[in-house]
Length: 266
Length: 340
Image 1 (cartoon, one colour):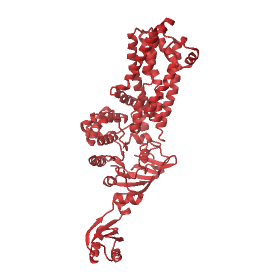
Image 2 (cartoon, rainbow over the protein chains, first blue to last red):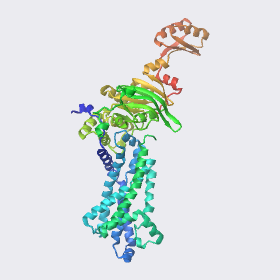
Image 3 (cartoon, helix red, strand yellow):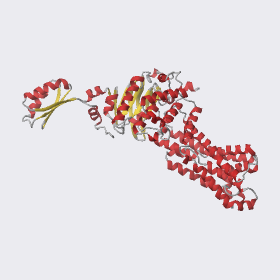
Image 4 (cartoon, rainbow over the protein chains, first blue to last red):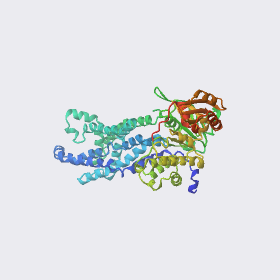
């Protein structure tokens, strides 16, 4: 068929998988063009890891006789992957009308969200590498070996993924970049009211009680198990359950917001 | 159900015309289409029948309901009441079938400034299920049509307003739609860019037979491009027809004579002119006589002769045929506000 015959080519639905890949590919192409969107996710965990290590390592080590470097590494991962989403890009699309253009194509509506989340997972996995390199640089070793490292990355990716639901829900609901930025703040109390920085055993009574009911505590415990505790079934199951619980809430919010945005009734 | 069953072109699942709706020769068909936003009725019972291959101009002042109608026809907004089909498919119950058959360039060029023009068009092609080879061929075709040149490989954020409009149009055409909706495609463009868009619209329609549904606030745009024009005011279509028919129906020819000084006997002059064939009314003012007639060319000679017979010194006499502006003024009691 020559170019002149291109008028015989007509549009059709692409299929769900291709829709997701197309949206993810577009999102990933933007990242090298806007490095500022990912650089803080490398700098911030490296900063907190270094500072906390410098300030607390002797105290923590003396009290428990364990590797504080290994204990703290999941905190750095959490800072790297939590809130890492393309929600700002989605807001820009909504504001410029590009989201409407996408909605006028036969793309499945769910692919608009899953495509961005797929890109997020790719970015999150990539962000794990420098954090793990920092850990390796200060002598952290995985007792679970290479499979444990892969499980650690996979768990971290799921962690990052389940936390993308909230910024996407805010983006789809409000279309406001400021609201999306603010949504990240919600993570801080959840994070710091856990045993992210010091072991649960040394937390004060009320703080320890809160940490016991905080799902972040169990996510961190699962990651720590992979580094220094071995394949601890209970820790991994509890971590998985915490992921599932957070995921159900955040993804439900995101899907409801997507449904509202594309309901064609606004 | 497979994708082909749901959305494929091989199987024609257009609305059966048994209920008298969704005719295949209609590109856009609406009946009693309503859209409310709370207590506000943006579109209030619109009936349209746009034939395939037609350029239909939809004309109305700001806030008349043009964009709301387009958004419903493009499946972005669900009608509150009434029915609409586009390319034979119901916008409310068969939106996916509608989407593969339409292209749209909405009021503001809906583009992603961070992508290059080529990336945006290629993504558009992928979302319409085109294979890589098909995307290349379609890009060659649409880029030839909209003449963006080497800038197609630059970020869209660097484009001028005119280039963005043309890229927006190209994005609407990548998948070879049957019906293209253009919502005020030239608003804010300079005259050269506007002329270029007009030429592209004519070419699309003439060469490819694409139905064009165009909203505009430029009367001359509707006059120059549209086979038929619908005038919308306060959510209702108040007139519809070819531009010339609308002018004939809602406007009258006017013969305007500038006369020397104040004529002594205005009443007699007016009375004499009023008795001429085809003259419907006469207004004699200070220094000016305005004759309204259904047939300006036929009445011009007799009016000039009659004025000369009264001894009135005529400085100039002109025939003014009605414009869409006159029609619009008559129907909406407002003049179009032009931004540019």
